[in-house]
Image (cartoon, rainbow, N blue to C red; front, side, top):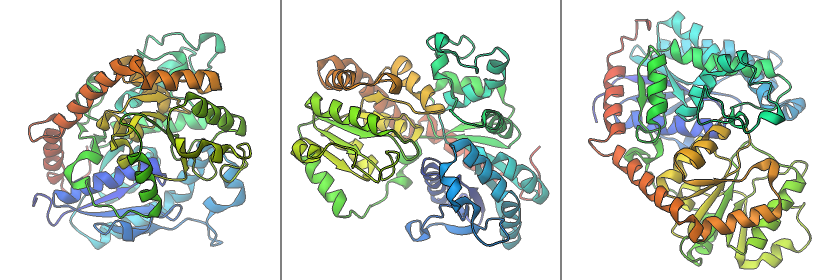
Length: 463
């Protein structure tokens, strides 16, 4: 493709895996359409550029004159996520402004800045000073974003002081959500969380446009809602990872081969794949409930337990002596997998997930039923849509988990009881495939997005 040849897009991802990956996938989409891409990335969690040879990476230095990165201080690891994001935004505000100015100074062909919605406070003034148009990437589902947009109203109506007696009450302002589904987070800084959430919405509305990793047939009503309340164009061009330019050859390591070989020995649609994402953590007692529930279900399972997932431990030390050995070939514990390959494997029959948006989309695209155990913020919204709107999963609340309930849910989703769910999964998988075809909705929106970005005058501010 030649459309964007000779033009550059600058991208600014949030340095967490769940935010970085969709930004990289979007970068590949732009590159495939002829644009060059430079990625400004914090010194915190800086990626290995050799893994992404298509792009130019620039490090944004931290603003600590003493030289040591404030994001790596010992007390940072004990912060809750909201406090951590606050520190992140403060640490990189001025360094980002300087890095963006330097990058624009290198090139006169910069079309726009594409940034993660969480960064809005770091980007607005800097981009305006340089006359650069801003495009926002929403890395969560549009339904979640609409719930964030409703937070001021919900706060005025006293929903956000969540009471145990109201957890199952329908929130009539944002159906089909119940009070327990509102995208909140346990934090010592509730006002800061509210500020981050409302900043995201305000920043999107003040930008030149919003790019969404979703597709029209999946979130049609939510897209209509956000479009009716926003003055900027919305581009639902997902699923990002299914675009042809994101289907890349991968080099498998020994662990990948071991996992694939184990999956190859399992019956079709028999394996429970378990992964709770890159940020959530659990207590030892929760690990034990999950482990015994998986064992007693008598279903084969593949469980990703990343190092540090269990608070206070390195990996599987909390499991009883001999537990892993007694499982034998019936279950497999790993520290990491290529999730896209696992979900696409014919042996996988269900995905027990935290309902992060990337995992949700990946499961939908492979037609895999979900067991939903959300941990925080938008994951609650995603779980409600998975269970009650799209009807492609079963709810298993974290607060109500015990080994008996886990055993019951795992057996039911793999058995004939789950046939209706599998049928809906197959239908939604086909819709995801259709949207990416030449005349599909996501393909058409991508053409509109490319033409829109091409129309930008790099010296003119967004109105």
